Structure formats: structure tokens, C-alpha cells
Image 1: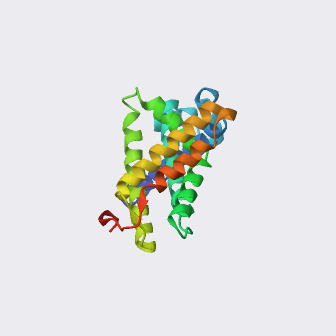
Image 2: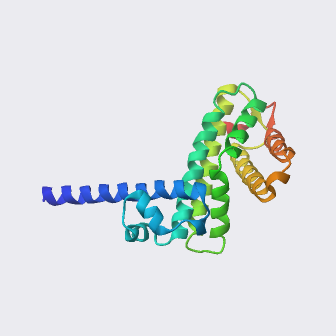
Image 3: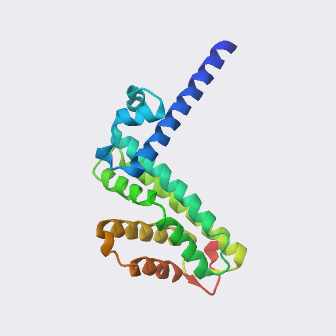
Length: 207
């Protein structure tokens, strides 16, 4: 029995490692090319697995793209939180977190995944779960920042988190669509929009 249990654990660990390797390879590939420019066989080769393992773990290339993009935006969320830790006032805090989000190309990849999933019932739940995490973890980070500094907020931490992600994703999409015609004033408007949520009196929701 002990040998059998060890074998099951080893198999699960190997499967988890293979799945992680596939996600890592997919993230690297999709960072430099769009969905149509990357094949399952290329991802499998980069992950040192068989193409059949990619489809076994993820089903389709589109599902892999969406899962990789969701993982990337959660990584960005951690970077955003870290970027705000050294801020000494609300304005520098908002500029730091907005700047960190917009500086990462993974934000646009997540926006592309959102668009891909909007008519796919099989992919939409993963996007929804990822937004739930972005909002809940963002609210936690905002609450912690308010407590540390004694800053006020005109709304709830949950609302700020929702406003932040909606705003920076929108800016990332516009910047990608307009290219060289993108007006930096749009990014500045994002800073001012989020900054406007901060106020002088501490919100009850920050506790």
C-alpha cells in the first residue's frame, strides 16, 4: 500500500510539474506572438513535453492562452502591490501602482484573453474567477495601505480595486489600438481618476 501511495504522489507531482512547464512555455511564447502565431507543438517543444500532454492538461490552445493570461495578470497584481509599498503619500502611491500595471505587457495579453472568452462559455468562468481574485486581493492591499498610512478613501477598498483594474485595462487596450497615436494624457487621466477616490477622512470600509 505504501508503495502504491508513493507512486500516486509521484505521478501527481510529475503531472503538476508538466502542467507548470507548459504554462511557463506558453507565457513566454504569447509574450512575443499572438495566438495564431504560436502552435501547440512549439509550446510542447519549449516545455519538453509531448503535444498530447498540452491538450490533455488544457484541452485547446485557446484555453491554454486564457489560463496563461490569467496567471500573468495575477502576477502583475503582486507587482502592483509591491510597487505601492514605498509610497509616502496618496499621489505617489497611485502613480506607482498605475505605472507598474501599464508597464507590463501581460496586461494587454489578459485583455486579449477577455475578448477571446466573451463568447466562449468554457473560458468565461476562468476570466470571472480571475477578476474576483483581482478585486478581493486588490481590496486587501488597499485596506492594508490605508491602515499603515492613516490615509482616507472616499469609497470602499473594493470599489477602488474594481475601478483600478477597469481603468488600467482600458488604457492598455487603447494604447495598443492607437499605437503611436496614443496620447499619454490618457494614462495621466487614469492616475487622476484613481487618485480622486482618495480623501481626507478614513473610510469605515478600510478596517
